[in-house]
Image (cartoon, rainbow, N blue to C red):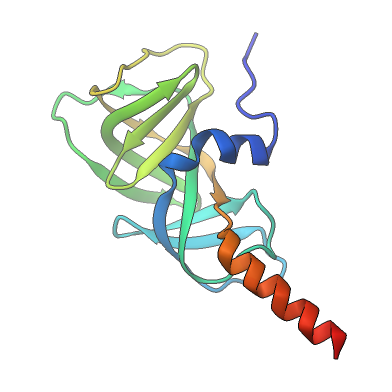
Length: 161
C-alpha cells in the first residue's frame, strides 16, 4: 500500500517550508495554474498548488516538489538541474534530508522529491542521487505574511472609500 505524500497543501508547506527555494517568478496568464520561475539557471514550469491569487511575480520562496519513480546513485557526485520538457526535469545532487518517501535533494536549489515508485533505493543525507521527474513539478508558494497583511490592509482601505 502506498503512503500519502501530503494531507493538504497547508500541511505540506508547514512540514517542508524550510527547504523552499528562492526563485524568480514570472508574470502569468490570469487564472492559470501554471507558474514559471527561474531556479538555478533553469526556467521551470510548476503546477501552482497554493492558488493563483496569493502571489505575484518577482522574488519568492517556493517549495519545488517533483515526483519520481525512483532515485538512482550518482557516483560522479554531480549537481545539475536540466529542463527536459514541459514540466519535466533531469536532476542530480546531494540528499540533504529525508522522511519516508520524501527526499530533499540539493540540485543547485533544494527539491523536495516524492518517490512514488514501489522499488528503489533509499538514500541517507549526504548521498548523491540522480533522477528524472514525472511531470508536472508541483510548486507551493510560501506566502509572505508581511506582504499579505499590507495588501489586505490596502484592499480594506480601498473598499472603505
